[in-house]
Length: 306
Image (cartoon, rainbow, N blue to C red; front, side):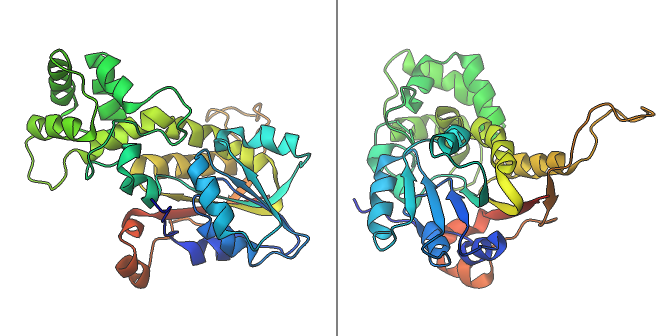
């Protein structure tokens, strides 16, 4: 299956990166390289791009897509290893970075990866297929209480308890090992007229499998710490949980003091690290919305190192 993916908010992201031709930039979620290609087109031969992706198939597809550029360093790892990767490359500072959080169209449409409730396949959901934890393991081995918490916390699912109970009842009879088996269990567990009530459960499992929110929250400050003054971090999110983390993390990094109110003197020694460029997130325009349905939920937030 060909690795297909349309980069969202591409023009807006490149514009907000304020790319310097001789600068060093990082695409922390390479995918097929759509955003990366636009960055490279603005770089000189002296400029460099460090391209991260934990999915080996994405790296392969991007190398083909970016074969005309020689100033790319490909790194097959989760972007949580950003800091150690820069150290290995003997790079202390960069001029900008991009994160496009979420699943690529290729991963969703490829039934064998198990991300989609629209295609029957193994219940996998790993972005890095070498990781041990799969959605099948979670669904069949986590306790009812743990499943309830995951569906509620990461899927904001109001029928979490019922779904978890029915999953446990089903797996006591046979293992839940395909996306359609799980989809059917969820559909029989909820009372709603929405088209795909299973989407929140699939989202929650994907987040748990790949530790998405944890990795995002832990990495933002690492990236900011390695930005040159004036360098920008652009983050595209696709659901409220991700966007909330980015919004709050940017606000925290913009603060000069985190001491409790009422203290006569600041004792926290907190130093403001960023200026928020986007008080409200940038969203897709009418043209992009008509051409790419995935852009409907996309939000871009930008901060700048001070």
